[in-house]
Structure formats: structure tokens, C-alpha cells
Length: 148
Image (cartoon, rainbow, N blue to C red):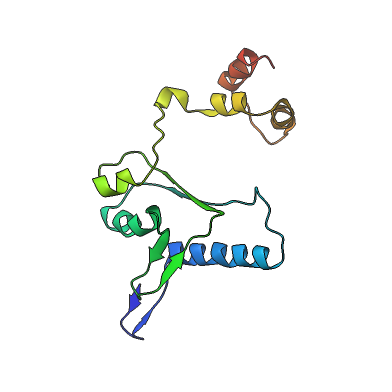
């Protein structure tokens, strides 16, 4: 974002997050601590805005660079991954859509029941033993169907 009072560019939330993860990747690499599974996930959840999603195209193509209004760019490291969790793509251009892998889930397949099914037995036991978790009658029915 450009501040007209100071004639300076101030980074927004996304560039700050990218920079933090890039710095973390560099520190891990320099200290020899980078692990195979030390991925850094950036998850963007919400509606797609036509303006900002177009600005993300340079991140989504082979260059993997976030180009900032200041003229600077931030190159994503190999251990950085981005997920967009959106309701629809009505504001996204074909160029943006073609750069993304898509997973479509029908509403009937989304819900806490499927999360319970996907977790290991140990995690299920931990969830069920949690004292702060409030169960409804529907929750209990689902748990019974899952053989608890």
C-alpha cells in the first residue's frame, strides 16, 4: 500500500506473511535444520476479489514471485505452499483458474463427521476425552455411527 503522506510503500498482510516465511526458510537452510516435511502453508480463506486475485497470478505461475506495487518482488521458497479455500470463482479470471489445481467438494461431503472419520484412532480418543467439548444429541448419534 502506498502512503501518500510519507511517499513510501507499506506492505500489506500477504507480503508480510510471505516475507516472514521466506526469512524462516532461509534461517532453517543456513542452520541446516530444514526438514523434508517442514512445509510452510499459507491458507487464504474467503471470497475471491477480482483485484487481489489478479495480483496473485505471478505467485501462481512458474516464477512463484509476489510482485509488489513498490517494484520489489518476493520469491516463494520450495517449502512454501498456498491454498485458496473459496466458495466460488465468479471473480477469478480464466488465467487465474488455469494456474491453480482445483478440488471441488460437494457440501454433503463436508462436515465434522468426515473429519472424525479421517483422523487416527488415537486422535479420536483424544477428542472424545476432551472435557471442554460439548456434545449435542446429533454429535452422539454420529459418534455411535462411527463405532465409538
